[in-house]
Length: 274
Image (cartoon, rainbow, N blue to C red; front, top):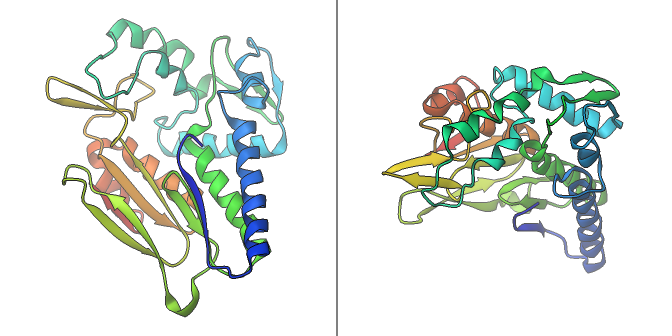
């Protein structure tokens, strides 16, 4: 998951705790292996190296592609799983090294979900195009692992993959899971959530950005221009029944840039923004 991961449990039985951890770990590694773009032995590699030919997609991958298609339409094309190729131009390492306009514009011809032919079970990309499910994969993994833990115990279990997290059930005696959130630009101050049920997902640029001439360039990129979304919040956290739903809203809010707060206020959900 390219981030710290943990499983916290309100479980007294050591054997049960070990079984929960084992099954959750196996599922997390399964999802990472299947959908990571860094591997050369999975469905993502097959799609990205098909050289313009159709690839037959399994049911699980198809559901994620359908969800990505929905996000593409809801965001008016701003959430686009074909935009990962922009990493060839952008290196968000905190430096002041911006790509040239030519380097960015040269990639736009191989970006655009509308250029993809998705007719279940066949997916066909134009030659040179790629997909990257990193924008939804971690949240999906959290929800899958929560389902597994819930099938093994009725006690409260928290699954946290890199700050995207969800719980299986409320804790005993009306207790809660204390979840910290770093407040950007305030001397590393931390606010605390009281999480009793559901999920929280966070999107932000606290660690991935460029800074040049006093301007901070967010890693949240507009796939239509290839450049960072202007005036995007530093971080957006959203609470929702599932991690996928929370992640969807936090990501869509980031893509709204300066209009992130107005967007979230219309959704009737709990959110934190800075």
